[in-house]
Amino acid sequence: MEKDIKHSETHHHHHHHVHHKVKSLLNSPTVKLLVCFLGIFVAYLLFGIVQESIVKGTYGQHDKFTYILSLVFFQCIFNAIVSKLILILRKTHQDTTPSKMYALSSFTYLFAMLASNFALEFVSYPMQVLGKSIKPVPVMLLGVLVARKRYPLIKYFYVLLIVLGVVLFMYKKPKETKVIDTGDLIGIGEFLLFVSLVFDGLTGGIQDKIRDKQKVQAYHMMFSMNIWSCLWASIGILITGEMYGLYTFLKVYPHVIFKMFLLGLTGAIGQNFIFLTIEWFGPLTCSIFTTTRKFFTILCSILIFGNPITQQQMFGTALVFVGLFLEQFYGKKKHK
Image 1 (cartoon, rainbow, N blue to C red):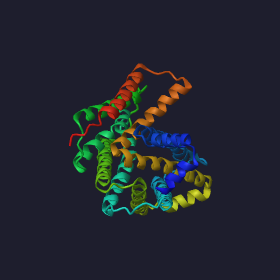
Image 2: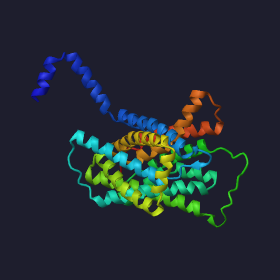
Image 3: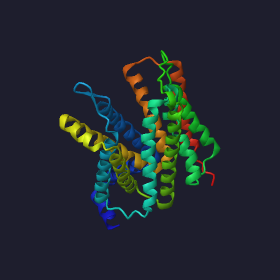
Image 4: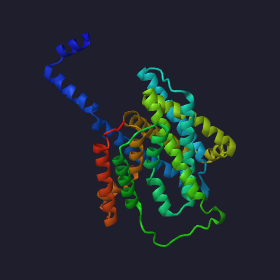
């Protein structure tokens, strides 16, 4: 209290007033929402570019980077270190969340990520678009089942509007149909996609539960989830035995190490905003952000580079914006 009195004496009243205004502005939910969204948007835009250049690039004559689990492992270590540093700097209270909840949610998170990456190789293009866009739906449904969340019925409708808009926007009619002959693998892609979506929903549900019960802070969750993910990923690495391959690969192409560091950095910045979104608004909002991110990326490129936009895309855009707007303003009423 003393500090406050001194503070207002030394500073002019006007300055104090402005300072107060800025502070209350920064704490307003709308500003927090926008900051989180922009943070996720920019960080993952850069993240995507770096990841693409690592994974899609050809090295030497025909070497490819295939060490996906190791990449995930390094990211998790990087994220764990970053969140630990923030926790040390911010001197926060102890996290009382039981370890098994983190262990479980980081497992479902990793599994969903790997399953969807694998599944997208095997499913048709329309299924890919749908699979990437429908994520908020299982997060919502499993939030209801796992964390006993209650959403007003209208909120389901708004979320479906967003999903439908994204699907319409993303879907282009294929020029010629490429049929990948997978033989016996028919349906395995769809099955994996379904499993990955269920696991995505489970991750959200468990995070919701942690959030409701423990009032946990973003960086505690970020640290614990990543530490556990390190464990799961390292088990996976031991099973696939890709560590040695990666070691020899990096010896031949050391410039990839810098790219991996960049990937870690952009990923950590993105995760920072993701966990802040989860702390402030919950996993559903987070899932809506990450789902519409791609949509906004393409929309921006259309606006900036003046690419032509189809009627279907315009309709999709309208649906997404209407859905987002309504979900934010009218999806709030909680029926307990």
